[in-house]
Amino acid sequence: MTQIRVAIELDAPPSRVWEVVEPIERHVDWMADAVEIRFHGDQTRGVGTTFDCDTKVGPIRLTDEMAITEWEPERAMGVRHEGIVTGSGVFTLDPIDLGRRTRFTWTEDLRFPWYLGGRLGELVGGRGVMRAIWRRNLAELRRLVESGS
Image 1: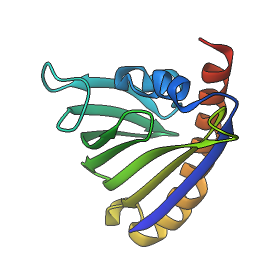
Image 2: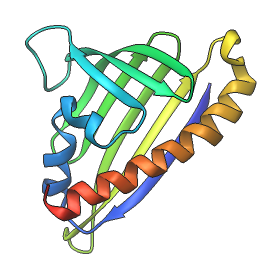
Image 3: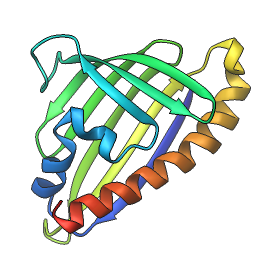
């Protein structure tokens, strides 16, 4: 298992950042690797929400079964991945500058199967490729949060 962590400081309070991050179905608007999200039932918010997320990284297409494991409005959203790539992740929103700004941190612990390179795939694909994609995702998140879109 390898850990990937990226962070960004946003010129908006945690309440504004949460407005953009809270609707799970809209993650495809700022995550380049997320293609489609399909909920398993009527629940679309909070702990216990489950969904499939189709992802695409280069030529690799995967569908992860995901479950929300942590839900603290304006503070944190945690998720468990089950599928070809397994693991867990969390978004944390920390107020900075007396709450006028937010430090958004995205941390994931992922395990790649042997046919995606196993441990080597985790290091190269996870720490290299995925970190680069997620940094780009955070730049798009910044655009959405700070533009008021």
